[in-house]
Image (cartoon, rainbow over all chains, first blue to last red):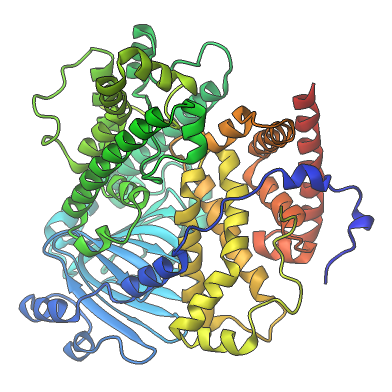
Amino acid sequence: MSEKRSHEGAGLPPKVLCAFAPLSPPPGFAQSVLAAHAAAATAVAPGRTRARVVVMAGLVLIGAAAALSFAVGSEVRGATVAAQRTTVAIGGRATAVAEPGSALSFVVGRRGDAEVRQGAGEVFYRVERGGAFVVHTPVARVEVTGTCFRVEVLPMVKRAHVIGAVVGAAATAAVLVTVYEGKVRLANGSGAVVLGAGESGSASSGSPTVVAASNAERQRRSPASPVTDAEGGEELRARYHAQTQALAEARRRLAEVEDKANAKAGDDKLWFHPSKEELVRRARDCTLRWDMPAVLWHRQLPARLARSYTDSEEERSIIAETRERLADRVGATVRRLYVETTGDERSSHMLSLSAMTEEIRQKGLEGEEQRVYQRLSAERAGLAAPPGDATNQGSPYERLMRLLTTAGDDYERDLANQLGPARARALREKHNGWENKSGNSPGCPANR
Amino acid sequence: MEMSARLPVGEELPDDVLRRAKAGVRDACEALIVRYEGPVFAVLSRMLIPKGRAGLVADLAQETFLRVLRGLPRFAAEGPARLSTWILTIATRVALDELRRARLVTEDIEAVHAISDHSGERRAEEGAMRAAIVRALGTLEPIHQAVLVLREYHDLDYAEIADALQIDVGTVKSRLARARQALRHVLEESRR
């Protein structure tokens, strides 16, 4: 029931609020949603995973019967054994990124409750809210309601390094869980612990309890130290410390970048023509800022933007065609890098360019974003030499960032070939840079 | 220019279409998306554009409807929540999740053009007003922004906003009052 507005005091004037008209859905939006929905529901190829399950005997999986039955009626089942990094849609409830050597199978019931069995390897999960979601491993289960977390099932050899104390273990594995968002409950027959964002926990069969600290114990200890040396968790604690510090540093640097981005005088030309001193300062902080036409979202030049640049129809035509050439080049490269990263050719034709760039970034190795920012900002400041063949060297994420951070310059250069350097620069300066201005500072690598 | 994107009772998706959409019938799902895409784009625009993330509106609108389609079988059509409210709740949470990420900072050219379009006095005034609103919303904490947008633009009541944002009704009222006050202050400053 809606409260009467007059009882709550003056709202804001309608004329003021109505001035902010929202964006409209593009043509065909509903069809693109339905296509993406259908793609997500069929992401696991039944034939392929069936063969892999049969070959990879000896791993802990649900029985063969479960691996052979798939999406029928309202229940969804699947299984995969990953020979390379593989993205798996778990019945529309979650996305799992399975690293090479990992094995998992799942059942999603008609009400959205999901049970996953992860027998080996490392898998990153992103789970949407909506019913129970449980990951069973050989030694513990992970219960979630909506979160991002990573589960590593460690074989016995590696486990000896991590735990350090068990001799002649009868156990087959230990499991390490790291939570990025939300909460999970890690439990086995010996006990249970709730892990929040930024925390890690470990469990193994044969130990008296789950290794990660209980809630009460965690409160007693330092928040950055959920596992003690006495419990053999030295490696876990070192990793947790590094993650916590990197996260805090990244937040601090982002706050600095945002403060500076909001500053007024003196920053107008920092998007595309910063001073040498400014570039050196950014290199010190591993910060990148760049401008480019918003071709990740709009291939064509918006009419209002075109009118703002020039009254000449001929010039607008040149600007528009140059932009579309850039858009096609950027689009083709992003798709190629996305397929290289994920192996998912089909999705590369359905996802937006911005969604693909984000996935390329997320699938980078740990610390890679920081290394790439450090390298590129140093090159921009003249403190490091760029590679000889930048388009083919480095990880997909590094090549993506090289593409995006130079796209604005490429566009200006192409315009200069047709309109002259002075005119091209004047166009870029019209709105203090091309319309998409970006900047970020993920923090410098810890070992710099 | 639309003031409230809320569909009056009687303009929600017809029951038979909703039933078929819950069963996964494609035409009915498409009708659902077409019916509610406007309000979803509206709430996402007003959450994301002021924070410099205009380019994500379409992607997150798609994400919103993917969540809607996944959760639709479990939506209680006879329950207290209207379909439009439920969908706007999902869109708001998607926006808030996005705003919690430390992401690239970008500038929205739409806001720039609103200032620089001088083809008529009235349009210039509207453009300046728009730019001021965008800037003012951008100064709010995301949760305050969400309360204001859901109340002022989408006419959700306190209980619906409280449920959408998982806060209590008293908190909704206090945050709404603070958000309005902050917005008025910024708008007054911009007129000087």
